[in-house]
Length: 112
Image (cartoon, rainbow, N blue to C red; front, top):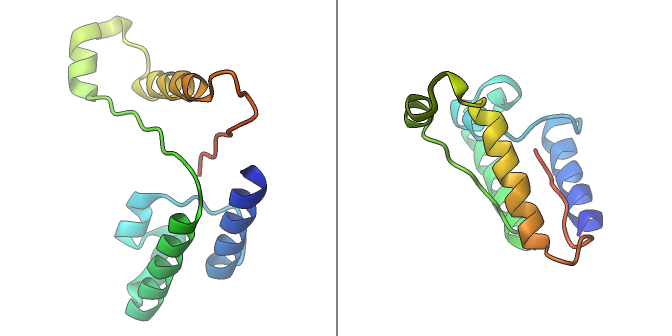
């Protein structure tokens, strides 16, 4: 799995950014910010999203997500509340391990 996903993502990044260290951050994509400023060009934007969606549609993966209502979380736990991002990461890793079950080599975390 890793031998398929990582090279495809690297190739995609190299094509659009000329390097592999860009983080595919939805907020920046939507705002055409930072490395994604080229998305203000309608042609490049269409090409980028077509290729991104084609790549994601062709890959075999499972998304595990966590959502924390920060205001409610902090209101409930007060000063003893753990950092909500650290807590969310702990929950994601726990769920990931649960999904793997006994087959520990069947997945990897790609935080990109």
